[in-house]
Length: 463
Image (tube, rainbow, N blue to C red; front, side, top):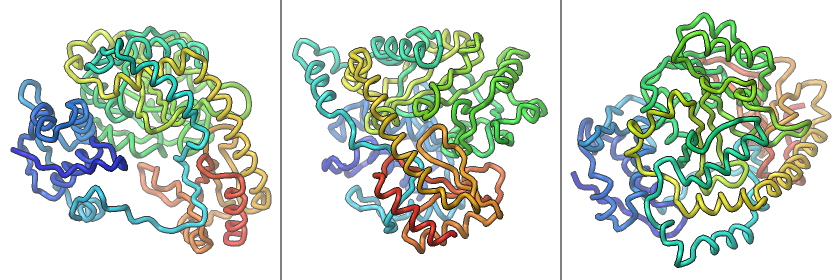
């Protein structure tokens, strides 16, 4: 089949996102039918006059989310995605236009839990390093590169993980990718379909990706200390997805005894793995960052996921995965034919950013910035102490506010909306549906004056 994709060269949306969005809509509306073969990455890149890696990135994302099915030596085929889900199908039925602005509600203050502060991004340093990379003698950065990622960046990541997380990883174990979805797709190629135990509640985007990659999801309840390991033992899971350093959305830090329980569980039977997502543990406001599970001295059952989206910027789309030796030796055979999804230029710049000490200085600066916002939010919330409890205050970029009287989050969100404030419920992150009395307040992309204004509005609405 042929695809005529209208690409907008206005810089507001990367080409790979436009390709991804267009094909997704065509699939959901049935204009691309189940089993239909899509153009090869080479053919589509030539038709659109863009990089083949750009098309590959879009295809990889669609594959990771279950919209496309790759078949070795044959190509990509449309999956069966014609389910009756009004929300997504209604959105998909709209005429695609890259110029169409998303409809957003107007709030005076938005306590988004996933924001980052881009105002402090070191633009001058990044430009300087990029110029050093883009010299005529360094033409190799314009070629495809290693499927695992640039060796220099992988070595830099290993040094950083050793000093900050107590991990002893080798560059050969590290895989670079454009986002967690792509890395989970590669991991599925290595492990096959699994029965994956997942903390409940959790970051739903990951659990949905895992389900679309044909894994069976087994919800495991959590308490104030994190995942309940005794409940895990009652399942037939052979992998566990866990956020031990800072669980989302509860903010819990997994204590040593439960970390040891997880490791014992993994070692009791060959082929079991712990999938550790370390998405924001750099931002702690008391003490040092929490060590990785592998810092306990056992590394083979542990698959480690990390990202630079919150520490540097989401724009560069650089995530990484550290594979245990038992999976790493199969990478070339099972995943070596996938193209690297991160620009070699971005990888080289990031490696220089880390090796030159700029990354550590940037992290220290951002810890100070976020600590100031965190403390401003804590102080502003003091009048809430009688009616609400605050948790997750030692780390991360959000706080959890829970009604002591059990007021449903839907009422809290509605009252906040009337006051011009957007807050985020916790119930949407439960895999087993339930009503919650908790909401999340993110502070990263707000100024301290906005934080105080937002809490003042919440005080009038909720107290």
